[in-house]
Picture 1 (cartoon, one colour):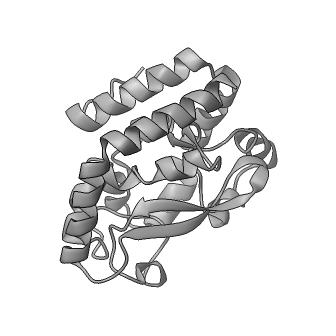
Picture 2 (cartoon, helix red, strand yellow; picture 1 turned 120 degrees about the horizontal axis):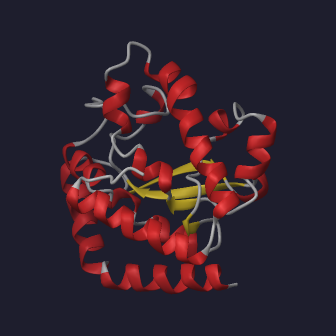
Picture 3 (cartoon, helix red, strand yellow; picture 1 turned 180 degrees about the vertical axis):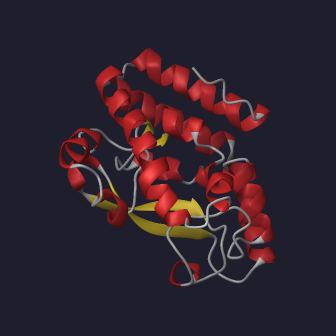
Amino acid sequence: MLKRGFDVVFSVCALLLLSPLLLAVALLIKLDSPGPVFFRQIRVGLDGREFRIYKFRTMKVDSGSQGPQITVGGDSRITRSGAILRRYKVDEIPQFLNVLVGDMSVVGPRPEVPRYVAMYPVETRRVVLSVRPGITDLASIEYRDESELLAASNDPESTYVKQIMPGKLRHYERYVRERSFLGDLAIVARSFRAVFTGRVNHR
């Protein structure tokens, strides 16, 4: 109950305080490339239920049919404005709408697309999907430069599945086992620090 109350209050405050920024970003996206302001994609949430996640669009329209479901370095599908939004995680802000409707939490394992969730080990999938997915978590902080890491690979998707995803899953399972309200506040603080300073502060 405390976590859900925090999610709602935090999301409402964030959307209200950031409303001028949201309007400016929406205008920037429309001026930069043709297409909708928002990008919606099917992700897997609590108890394996699928939902549509909201993000600001950072890629060209129909980019999903032009490449893999992961983003690699200087991906040609990314728009000029999209590169800036991704760098500062501004594209994630619309997910506070997902939090308000109950699909997500502010802090929790990042929701994946069904294709990759199907690759999770059975027990890991049960544990990870036992909580609401989040906008941020420890894995998001540790792997904030994921696209650059993948850009150095000859087979980015294989690198993601065999190296990065297992590391993320360890963080997700750790979160589920050790989660607490104070722990969530610490993750939110570390997330802000990582975005605005570029320092991850590994532990």
